[in-house]
Amino acid sequence: MKIIFATNNQGKMDEIKAILMDTNIDLLSLKDAGIDIDIEETGRSFEENAIIKAETICKLTGEIVLADDSGLEVDYLDKAPGIYSSRFLGENTSYLEKNNYIIDQLKKAKKDERSARFVCTIACSFPNEDTITRTGILEGFIAEQISGFNGFGYDPIFYLPQYNCTTADMPTKLKNQISHRAKALTAIKEVLVSRMININALERYNEGIDSE
Ligand code: ITT
Image 1 (cartoon, rainbow, N blue to C red):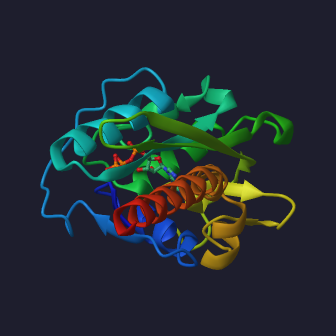
Image 2: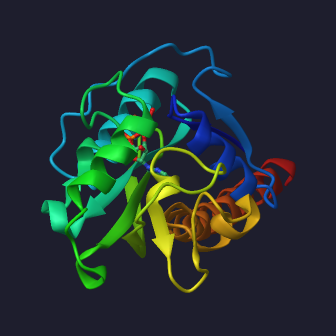
Image 3: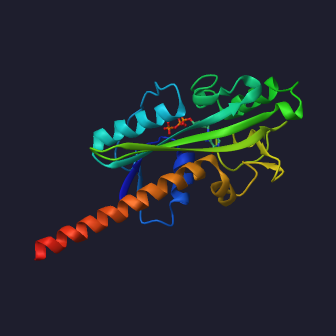
């Protein structure tokens, strides 16, 4: 089954590909599908933005489309950067600067004031049908210093006490088992698999009628 993943973020693409490795889904990036588009994220929530991205590409291609809208919520900063995570401090600001800025803003925050979470909503849009969404959350804390080289974005400052490291310190395989994205995708995968079974059953039924 061919599915387009509507993202221009290679870090997300790599994670989703790894998580869907055990399925027969042929996952294409926007680049693989020959689509060069920057979709304006005008929604007011992760869910609204994920739906905008999935439905735009679904209407354009007529294919099943997945889209992810995700980000980091820092409680001490009133849940910023939230849905503005990739645009935080400006589109062209590096993650080193963004991460250092957040650490600096939390300089006076006590341990229990450093709570934060990664949120991911994945939308799946079916041509001429509905769009479904599922959300995954990973709770953690803002680290006191940057650490680790794996992952992308805010991983070097997202600390998980149960592993005593940031999500950039942990092996990719472990992050892909516990992450906000893995949780959202696992829930979407269940719907996809059950729809695939229904489509296959319908095709077999129709073939049976044709051969009668
Ligand atoms: P697309 O819209 O093309 O998918 P994007 O990077 O603009 O790519 P978002 O608008 O969803 O995506 O912004 C998500 C940002 O949140 C992302 O760029 C990271 O900065 C951050 N983020 C999301 N998931 C993350 C993760 O697993 N690890 C680190 N940072 C993450």
